[in-house]
Length: 160
Image 1 (tube, rainbow, N blue to C red):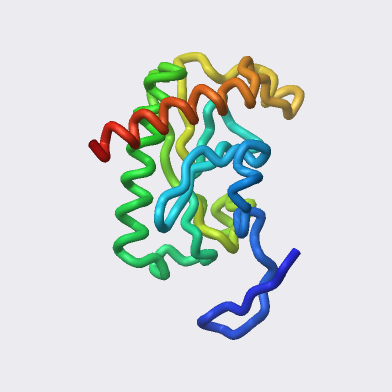
Image 2 (cartoon, helix red, strand yellow):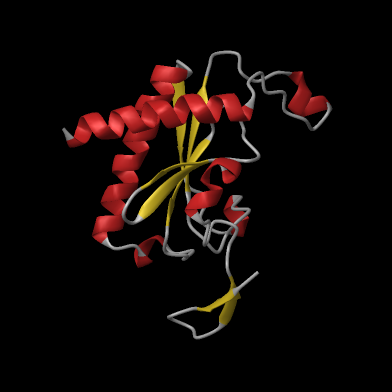
């Protein structure tokens, strides 16, 4: 893992798992879309099928470090995610947010990222409670292909 120097503190930090994903690894790393300042990726450890994340290219834990252009693109990409999820998986609702800091539940607390979790009535069951396991009924690669196709079509329609 490579290191980078934090601009504010000068302390060398390890790059996060979200940094430097080359485009040729998009499919194997489940990158769905690349914007100018941020990208969309599927969560490898999803809460629900279709759990997506919008991640700025800038590695920072601090929301205030993001410029206005990045914040706007994060919202635009979130909208794109929600539209694509509605089209492909037809959820009844969504959870959207970020875990800012380790104590807030952030497993990658050095690189801010935003979760979009599709929800359906009755989507929780006894497995997470009794077995500490989550059962997902969709294959991630199939879901990836469906979402990638929908996101591409929606992004192209927006440009037109």
